[in-house]
Image (cartoon, rainbow, N blue to C red; front, side, top):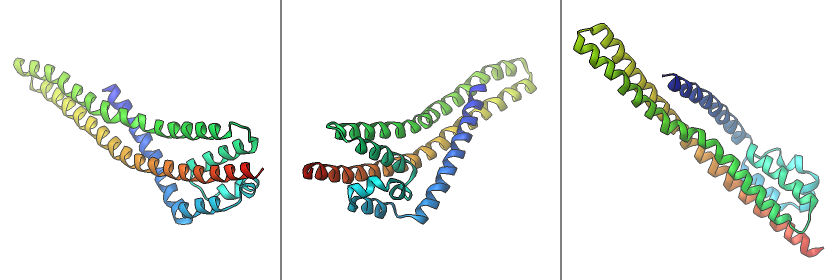
Length: 195
């Protein structure tokens, strides 16, 4: 039961963060068209983008903005292995973003399992109380059994719903970051060939 309570608190905190991110995304979506912003960046000149990185990144969503700023820092250094460093940066960012889903996957699997365990364990004492004719003890055990089942299912359903939406957002963010990276790296390759 203690583990179920801990998982429930973890779900509540996760749902709060999810709600905050949802509100921020809706607000950002109303102010900016991300595809249009990325096309503007990709249609700009590399030198202008590097010089005015704050201005260009101000309309990007959180994950794309951070990745874009890190990528521009790598391009400023411009060595022979810049493309490899940018690729590593992109993969690291994607891995960091997918880590957020690990906690939800844990809640999806462990919550209902602990709920089932919380059902089975008190049933033993409920059956023992029934055999002794102690209806009060039996009803207390049954209440615990059904409560843990309900809480376990609530944790699983809430985490599953949250993970579905966050997975969709994650895929969209990764798509935008890859599109942005591809455009910037093409400009970088062209500028390298001219130099």
